[in-house]
Length: 322
Image (tube, rainbow, N blue to C red; front, side, top):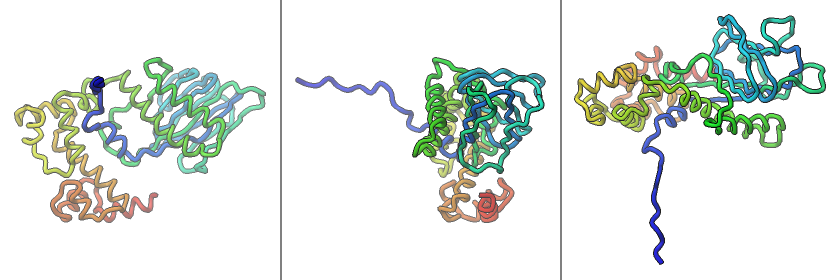
């Protein structure tokens, strides 16, 4: 008897721009600690360029952010991601109290995850997992310009993967078994992606880079230039992909994405070039070819104009900062 034919009912897009971007942002995530807290307590996070996250596993907390008038309550199961150059504070009660805080500041930690207990009570009032996301190659990327200073995500059946990842991270952080370092690292990376997905579902923008990914005319153009940034793209060629005239395409791209197509392409190439220069795995001639330049001299000129440093200087500066 002949077997019934197999039908493909869904498949990944030919090129997933968001996956490519997330894969090249240079995400470095880490968990500082899982804190078991008995009041009175406070956690102070000094200002930095990091994205800090807090996962409220149990109990409650109050969030205070520099520049905001009123503290905000946090509930069990909530995930909070904060970009606050001026810093922020969590506490068991709203308002400042004479409590010596647990302080997190960029550059002064051991790099290892820790289990912390604060207070003398037998049972903690709150349990919070704290960590950060660092994005090495996110400077000037349209995605980062769209993210708010605070992403606060509550338990939601529609975002079940976010809750599942957060739950796994909490359990792994609470046991610290052999192999926990790599498990926690992978789960924290997944947490960032799930937070981003959940935020996109709740706050889907009508314009801007994220909206452009699913735009019927601009989406395929973004996929093409991300897949082949080295190709000698012209506005005419991009317009043909969008099935629009040159002038109509230029106007549509600028309106949806927020900048001209050639500016977007230049930024994409220069971000890729900065990453490749930092990695030291390819010669400058190879990087020039990979980012669409016919000669190393033309690449060097474009790189210096965009980044303010010649590729060799940029590479040495990155090595010193590592």
